[in-house]
Image (cartoon, rainbow, N blue to C red; front, top):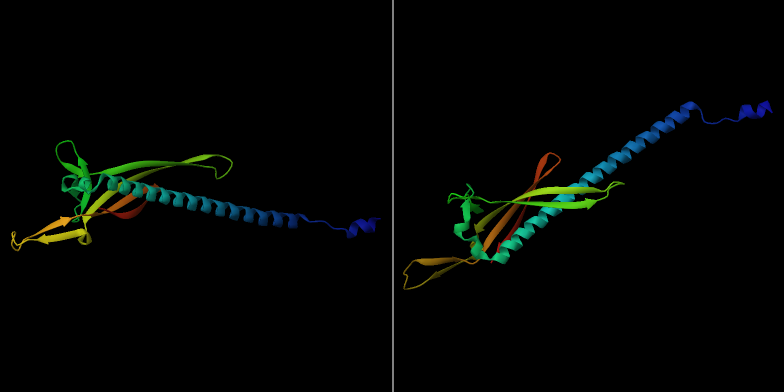
Length: 175
């Protein structure tokens, strides 16, 4: 009977320690993969929210019409372009920064989380040669009148993600 037990062998302590180490490395790799997936999901959700904010601004300005984008409501951006402006209270105009907050509820694990992102949007307005008509008359002589019947909007939306500023620009046309 003694011979029978001597020939039977189980796992030694070395094999068990090696298996535990391999499983530990695999567990850490899966946890790192999950963390990367969560960051990618949050980055994509933030970008989708920024796109939604920009589209809402373009649709809102489109509903108000091109008259809302008259030169009285615009201020220079310092680079030759125009920006949507608001009154500074003393009769002057300053660039208007639109702030919007979006929240999403999610459950990436056992605990439910709320993701809140603060977006800042700046609207740049430009005349576009495609949307300009010139008329001339013999009564006016050689002078012609230019009429802008549409304007191009560039909405730049910025937000913070992991200690860096992310941004997108969405363009649209208001007729």
